[in-house]
Length: 173
Image 1 (cartoon, one colour):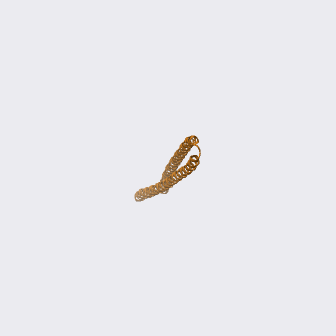
Image 2 (image 1 turned 45 degrees about the vertical axis):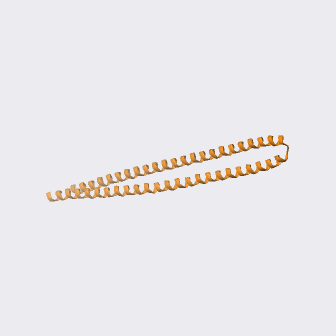
Image 3 (image 1 turned 60 degrees about the vertical axis):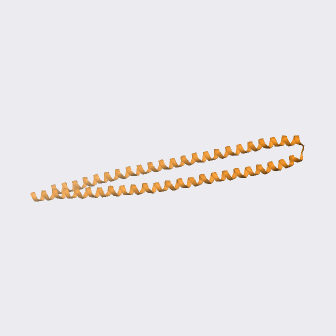
């Protein structure tokens, strides 16, 4: 009888050790999975930021091209107006030159203001999108880690309780 009780105690100890080892392995696997998920998420964020930077650069290049084209058109218009004005009387020439200069300055100022506003809006939108993506990813990773750890701990506790109950129940018989 004493041998049977000692065997049952040894069996309980072995079963508890096996369950603890299995649970430690499960926790290590969960940690490895979480680390892999975090690395993948970091790669996705880097790719998203690179794409956003490419879009911002493309928008700036387009805006610069638009400014250059507008300035070229304004220069052509000014040259044509000046050629026509040269033919006209000196007084008309002075008036037309003043009007053209004012119009050119206003057009250039308006175009520069529009370009600056568009670039600022694009940069703000990009920053907001990146911050939202990072926050969402971090929240999802934290929630997944917490849920996985809670599930693993609950499963481990249930397994230990079941093993102890089975061993205690079998030792009573």
